[in-house]
Length: 372
Image 1: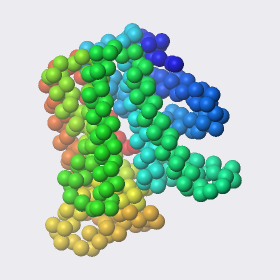
Image 2: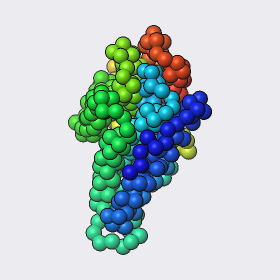
Image 3: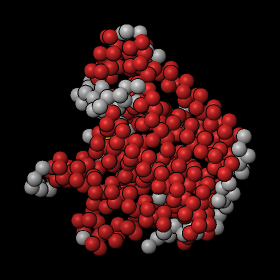
Image 4: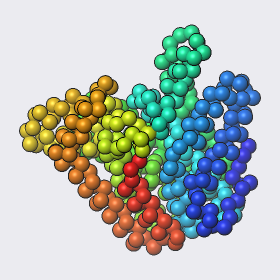
């Protein structure tokens, strides 16, 4: 079994300048060892796992491991040596939680593409067709995606627990790790529920945003790194405040990109969030304003485009215009600015170790002011 304790990072400045690259290499080595195990079980299992591994390694900004690493460093964790190597593997395990969430999310939303490539369930659906299997190709693709998403979640736990983190540190890390898994799945369920038992209030949209995205993107990864390093209560509280605000701001930016983003940059079709019927904060703000203004035409248009799988680019453009005219875009941008400001205040008054404090401030801007 591969373990990061075998590859201790060194030369901290150079190492930290390419942190996503080190996460990528850690994941690649770990996943190769697990693929070999799967292939020993059966070549068909090895081939399926290869698809999962390609998905994990085929893109992503490695945001979650990066925040975990800087939570570790902000709390006194070293940048090199065996402890740092163990932390690198523990942080990298977060990408397998992300893989599980994305594979299942794409299946739930019936998405065709992710990062400009076919989603996992579509890949296996196509495999069914190409191989002339018996039965229903859609069902086969769905089943394969569920199983591979579950496998990614199981391997996330395996990767964390084989990292070499000391037992006491692991016990501390398990509090935010367990909370994160429950929160992201709860948020996903509320998202699904909200599309059929419609609650269009901004408060409901914000709760889903906090649980489904903010928690496991920034706040909990930061806490995991800090807990492993043995952070005190004041540092943990400051990182929790910072992480909560930046996590929500990150998702609000993602919601804007889901409607206004360039497909060539985001890797998703234009307006996909509208087709999927997502009741984001952006949509909730627009609906609330349309109702307050008694603008039935704009309200009707929003309800017509939400959840329409055949939504045309022209209708997407019309929805964008309505969202802008109702002030929803401005309202969400204002929230992002306010949340980023409050997060920076928490960070700057926490007295965290450098260079982590400065790097976290840079990351906050990078994840909330982006084009993809």
